[in-house]
Image (tube, rainbow, N blue to C red):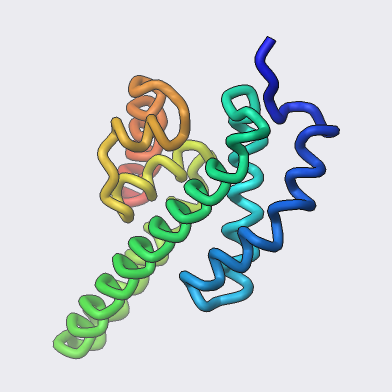
Length: 166
């Protein structure tokens, strides 16, 4: 039987051995200690989630690759958010006060709807609509089937339709 990191006695030493180096590696890229810590922890969570597929000898490469990909995803997300905010600001400068109020009210309903979505549906919705990822890539990243992504998105869109009507 092939070795993996699913047992605590294999996982724990990897965590203690690799956490500081991974966090420093991620800090080098993002220059934000808090974000580096979060990304490193998320990488270890992903290692645990995929423990049956990762041999202890490959754990370091897995963690660094996952950590770097999480960093890239974070940067893409920030870029999308900044773009959205700059567009919103430009729009607000050209609006009349009543339209601005209605826009803020509508935006609040949208975010409330997103917050009310089941967690898995919200995750798929944000990955698709905010990060711009296609369903196939979402399925790969979440290690689920394409039909599961479609079902989760369907649930998310139902929540959004109800929020827009309401």
